[in-house]
Length: 73
Image (cartoon, rainbow, N blue to C red; front, side, top):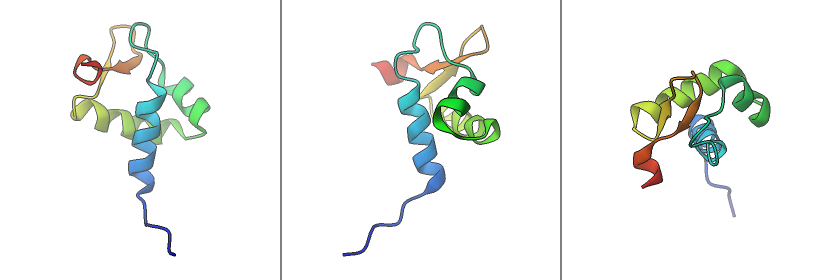
């Protein structure tokens, strides 16, 4: 049986989305996400920008990132 092909960038975006869990109020920084996921800050930035564009994440006033209200609903 062969393993299905997956998208590295798609998997990264989903890992970032999962990592946002629990940070609705305070948010989490790009650097904290990068360190926690073992990714470069540039890769995290691209993933976060994709999530923001799709309405699944927001950048808070403090510069940190959180899941969007739409995602939480």
